[in-house]
Length: 187
Ligand SMILES: *[C@@H]1O[C@H](CO)[C@@H](O)[C@H](O)[C@H]1NC(C)=O
Ligand SMILES: *[C@@H]1O[C@H](CO)[C@@H](O)[C@H](O)[C@H]1NC(C)=O
Image (tube, rainbow, N blue to C red; front, side, top):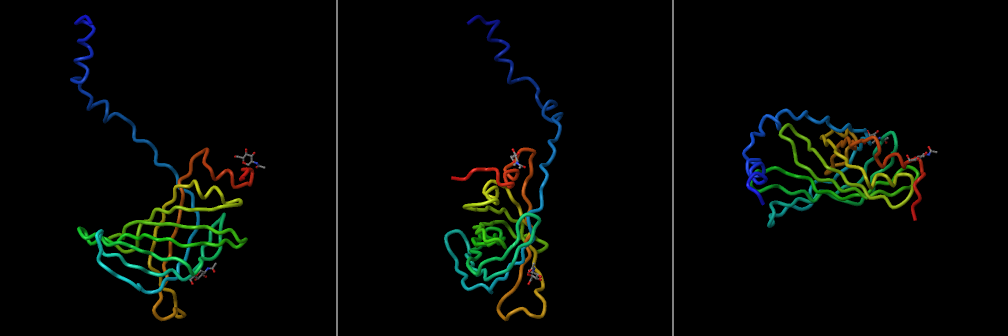
């Protein structure tokens, strides 16, 4: 190869690129759509044990409800938060699995995880599994939640407590939620 062809290539990495990088416009944040607010009934931790990844705590989930514009129902008394406390920072992160049942009988398996916040509460990532029906699009959403501690009122059973979790999902022009009109064929 002739030297004159090589030179532009060789000098390429030496070009200043900093200005170009800073000139990039900041992309707009994707919008979020409200999914539901849930009230989760929990029993006080049953288990707390040090392990290879930190202290693992098991908090049974014994019921509750969720209410939103496209899905509402109850939380089944079947699930727990097997949260982990980071031994290096002392920060607790939720690690839950539980089940929702909508008012019209659709079963949804939920997994959430995410760290406790310094001011109280937690930030969560949420994943949904749905086998059939009009809520099948929940399998494809990218969802986030905000958990806060709530006062369950006077009726709260001894040894239990309530949490509130507000959940949103990322929304794009052509996202899977459009299939909720039932047009998607599911084998
Ligand atoms: C959900 O549970 C909370 C806490 O017990 C209660 O205040 C609220 O009324 C319930 N919502 C529905 C729709 O049942
Ligand atoms: C249902 O949603 C699909 C996908 O967005 C769309 O192509 C179809 O026209 C919609 N059907 C009705 C009846 O709204």
